[in-house]
Image (tube, rainbow, N blue to C red; front, side, top):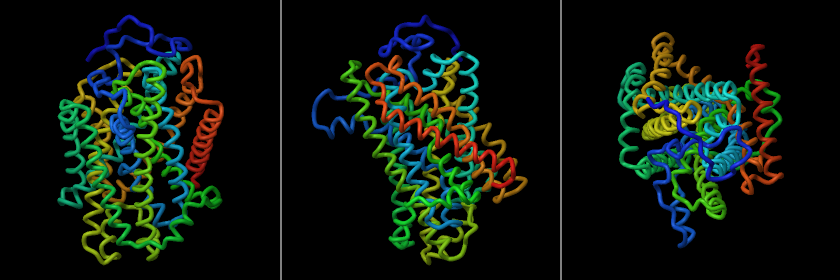
Length: 457
């Protein structure tokens, strides 16, 4: 563990407006891979796009992790295609917020955790760190459950055993990081392709009515007026717009060795935004695909209370009449769980380093985080079985949603501030839109909290 302090030095950009000066360059976020990927100064647009491609796909993992499966399946089976509009709107919010996170990292040389530490009084920074750690644990909880369920479905490993096996992913992350960040990105992209292909085949097999699917993308007032639907809708938002992803993205965009001039930063922001937007459209397809399959297979056949991933697996092949449907479902789930463990590991490291200046070995940080998530899964699985873990999975997404304002509000505040961002601050119209998104998230979460306390949800 390294807790030594270093003398502050001037930041690379936006030298005024911060409560504390930027820390020494050796404290760069993910310093072992910081600026290790070269970016061509010229060449075709495709060459430059490929150089920046990678971080967007890594953060897109968080938008299609096992937590999304529970909420999307529940939403599709209960309410048909209605909540497709929520998936689309939350994805659009995600595109905006991730673009802001990339902008912050590129323009200031700080990730979101470092920016919070450098801007707020220490007690506020510690409170934000605790909130973010809770979000990471909630996310990890979903990954443990999803991976354990996939291992059970594919190989017959009991849930408790599968949850314990997930601890080994710490060594997978360590191996990939040692090979280089590009290897890590390639691993992520390969598994994303597997997930997308599995759901593409399932959608073709389910053959949903096109007009009904398109109609689901039109928002309905019932989403707000129906407490049960709103509960699932906020769970979808919590599973889609991931708090720790904002910290992650603001850091990993700095793995690119771009020109540190103002013009170089502008180009880097542009290409990083294109990268994340394309990747998040893939996430929209996967999330929409999960809900569409659930609506076309379960809701259409009267199975309106399918919330359990294992129940969905058991029903898919019989209802579709194709044996491979359930296998594809389980393979995609396992790929999703493996992918999510990698990005959550990095997010945990970034948050701990950024807020506390504490560095732990990757394997130790991952094992600590994973152990915190494994314990409740093992206990719930042992006491309540599959139904208990399904409810725990959905609850984890609601917890994630409750943490969102603590990441979104500081992010929007920073990128709107010209004293901190200089000429790279967002424009007033974009700032207004960003604050509207932050307000929507805050209002929905307050309503969810009231409904939960009063027993409506």
